[in-house]
Image (cartoon, rainbow, N blue to C red; front, side, top):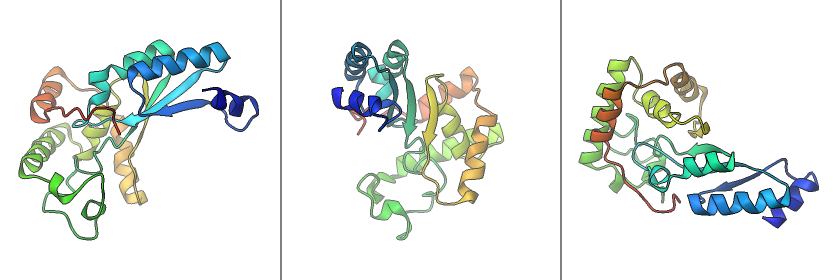
Length: 188
């Protein structure tokens, strides 16, 4: 933390952030930084409908206490929570060679879940990815999401997810029952 503080004071960095810290680590880092006179601004960690370790760990509550914000990485679960893999994993898609998402991750059960998500999205008048992104922004601590688009054609419909952020209780219950949370541990 001292090195990060030195970088901020030397105008080599504008703020301090961390990545994949647990709630306890975040509070500790924020306390150290506060004592050094530099606030913790942001934590970047994975968060999606199927990767909810940050909820289990209460990381967003810790960030609220630390007055920090959150950047959700991989909110589409490396595009698994879209219609991209509904007919298998094409050899030219990243999942075909990724260490983070492998063809074995695209299971019949996961595809059934995504089909249910497609139904929910259709009822909301959205693409499959849009409610997934909207769900990510349920907490006011979440200030942005890293979706990893490779074209404007991917960006534009996904950016429209912010036009419909609200979910009713029935939708949230459906999401929770459809996509059983998987806790991976430290978020990495």
